[in-house]
Image (cartoon, rainbow over all chains, first blue to last red; front, side, top):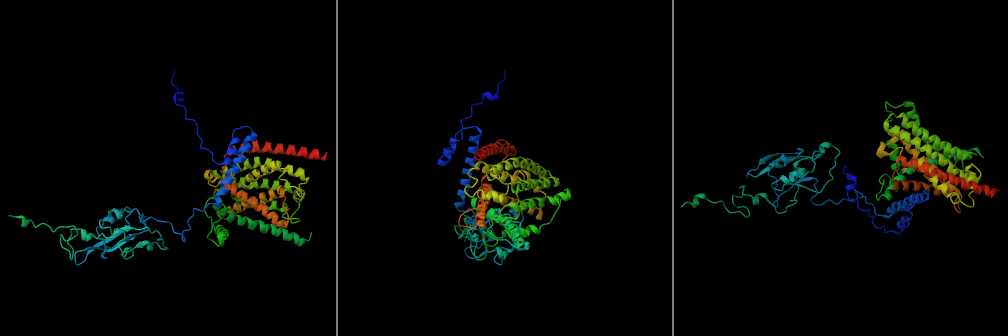
Length: 215
Length: 317
């Protein structure tokens, strides 16, 4: 005889109900036993009334809706919203126009053109983000080696014209450093740039003069 | 009766019913919002009252589209039927002492006849749309209405037996000393359930059942034709509430206040019940609906009729 899987399966544990705390429901539980027409009607009417009571009780609760334009939703500081270009503590542009953000952008919404000033310091000649394409994934912020590009908790950027969603460099640049207040790329990198030679950055020793080591 | 008084009543009832029906759109959405811990429409006008106006304007400017596959003539006629029958039923409802458009001696039968005719609207709408969802909605409407019509009528015979008349004003007058909800409590409950089914409201909204049938019988409707179904549903809610008030809660009778006010207050209370129930109960399954109708409500109304008849005969004899 074939083994019937139905019989060998262990018995299901008895159903446990959470204890009913409210007195009104206890009264209704008494009528739960009968199977005739009248107990069934009584149960149906009772459970309907209890349900109505629960729903009516919600009339006294505070409403979950946030009245948006008057009341603002709380957005955490790391919320991924409008993208900005920050400046270093000296007030200079942090962006070194390395194109990493444009390269990593999955929707190709970042475009820029690199150039150099007379001191050899790189910066974007123009920097353009098309926010009608941007998906606010934050990859650009992750890719940025100088903390220049950052996402901010601002989502109120609706426009009537689609081309108004394209932000140029002057729209993106902000006055301050954003996150990482003290970070200054040129002060921690070994790169020689106008006014700062090799080895003059913070925590940096001057480069070893290999000829000096000769006997 | 003076002819201009009659005209005034006709216009008064028509305007009042239609404006309450329009206001109900706002009332229902706000009340449901309150019960569901949200606000509902609160932006257009004071407390969102002008939302009705905005919605009406919007629906009026929608394209009046008839699907090319639909049965055109029936498709156009069907939505008007639901509103016309519901409005016609108000003809016999006494709003206050003597404030009635036509105090027919078969008033209650007239109401039942009109609510039976309203089924045609839904069935024809579902049929003429020639779409599967509409057709299933129409089929459900036919089955639901036919089975609920039976005990809707039977539940009211107890009231008629006690009042000794089909005339609604006489039924109200017979409740001078005791509202019929006391001797006819079972009849009231049965009529209430049947009323929910007649108005195709939750928990008996299988006819439109948006989670199963898109929008049921009015899936293919748009613009003001859809609006007529909507208004028709609200007028039906007012009608059923007014009937409950008239038949079981003493109509315009009440101390201190004028009759119209009592009638309105009682009717609004039942309209509110309709909306609160919508916020509470889930939709019944099709077989549950049928079982409730034929196995519970019909026997209940028959027993109620039997007992009421016996008591009436015993008191007369």
